[in-house]
Length: 341
Ligand SMILES: [Mn+2]
Image (cartoon, rainbow, N blue to C red):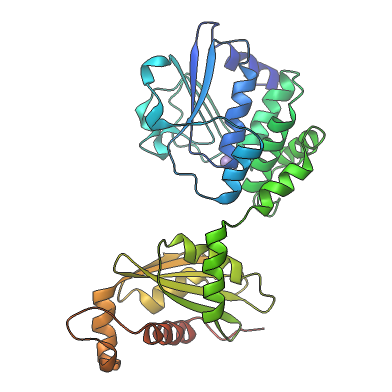
């Protein structure tokens, strides 16, 4: 089916009195794809609203919504009865229970095929971004995208392909070239620079004071934390140090020791390393470049009491942070390998 035939089939699902709900798991690619659906249906239906169910926390994504003036509505504010057509983009209905709340007229997605249960299904796993598919619809409809729409779709492609470092199709590159003519590069820079909230920077400052670098591995145990995301942000930040091959940032949250690991992907898998080092005592796993460990403080107290009985204050699970820090370093150094160029 040609792009124009796909467009015609998609548009033919709708009539002028329809009220359309586009449901997304909001990330840049999904947001941009939903905006494109809204544009395609402009003046063809009576209303299009975009709804999302995830919590949007990343400062860059929040900045994207703000500077591009994008209107998306949390799912709890949506009354299903006000809509009679449902579209999902950049996901399939079986990806999340919140998607399963609706019956879909159209699914447009680039993830591996798992659920093509709508009247209209366009699923192309070979594409790096759903925004690329939507760019082809926009081109087929002979629409000149507005600056916010083109900028959002460019962000969608750039994010999902990691700036073309991840799986990319020729179509993604072509869509990027097309969108670039209509987008605003200064807005993209503004969005991408918005990496931290002020309080994240304060947390990083605290972690910097605690950091230890051993064998090109940056360690920081930060003690009690408000949110494990703080460790994630800091672990990513430490990878910006030129000599860092790994970063290992830990903190205590909800009576659990959380350890976040990042590495550059050039050496031993972070996921395998944490499995070997911590599987015996907690949940530990991840991928080549990122991993996460969670250990109940009571289990850690038992483990540490064997070697550091003096560290346990009587009757509670409070353990001196310096012992925890040393214990993590010891475990990681034992299992992470020594290839440290
Ligand atoms: Mn996507």
